[in-house]
Length: 433
Ligand SMILES: NC(=O)CC[C@H](N)C(=O)O
Image 1 (cartoon, rainbow, N blue to C red):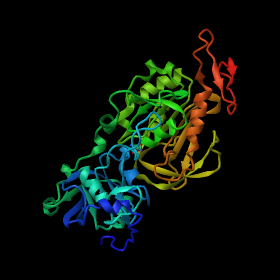
Image 2 (spheres, rainbow, N blue to C red):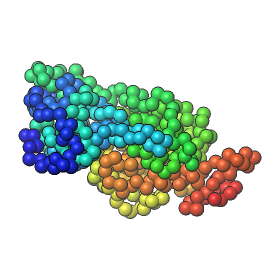
Image 3 (cartoon, protein in one colour):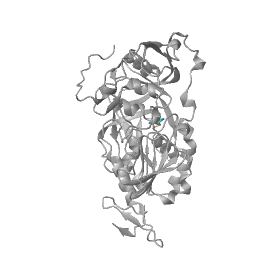
Image 4 (cartoon, rainbow, N blue to C red):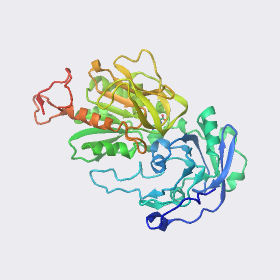
């Protein structure tokens, strides 16, 4: 059923003016490699695709989720029964030195397809310019409505993330593909496909210099750094950071799609960085997995991963704004996780643990290691989701500031020490600001 019961307020609804008209009824099916099929109606691009079928329990921010590059190659099933009721905004932001040029998480829809129980044909929001249906069609992304997403989710929860095919139009009536025909996105290095090919800078006049290794960065990660007055240089995922590291006050590793095993090259380079460079390093999701692999931990594929905006994590250690013993509600989108091992590699400790499934949600360098390195499996930048851990960006930027190299004193390297931060013994402190 379409959401005809949605009440819109025409005076407030700029979006209705550009509403793309009622959906025509084109059949569409989701076929799983494990043999099950779900028949509904198409509301997106009239084409069929293969992908990896995953579910997200988020109840809002479908626009941010669908533009998250970590969903590349995935057929995204929303468990929330009604999707699309606030439409889609214009995905542009003023391009200036303070922002990253998009309103959403990247320039386009990144997931391979979306599956919803009930698409909202009418939408209403003061920023909306089009419906989710017209957005999907413009981006050539197929989409299905009118299927039992609860049944799909229960299957995926039991059998795990499953390869699938979205078959649209005449393809929906065609025989289900043979098992060997299902394409497995995790067999490919998706990071290499999405990462920037050339380095670029944001906010070049910022007061500290942070290098970002781009595994498929969500825009809000870059925004969260720029808005804390960092000059950000975004580098390809496998860039030789060690050859330029002296120019930076900190290193950040972003989220990204697919199996972290394809990025071992980055983990090995990072191992050298961590051994020879004492500045702050922070990683989110794929970035956290790369830090873990550099530290000597293994990453494994979870049954159905964690995707949603209400994942509780328990802090096991205190650092900056994070207090040991507290539970934080977090935004997540991942299929892989670091293996909990006992003992942890020397110089490392678990930082967070997931309260639902006990998976590793964060690691950090130990206090006595002399390092400032953190990785978190969840998304502190939370676009969308709760902002419980957003101050981790402030913590990171403050640490970078504390390690900032002052170039005006070439003979004796000196570091500006933030009053918020206790200088550590291994850092030569020439001047305190
Ligand atoms: N959001 C992410 O960075 C996800 C990391 C990795 N692709 C995973 O699925 O676990």
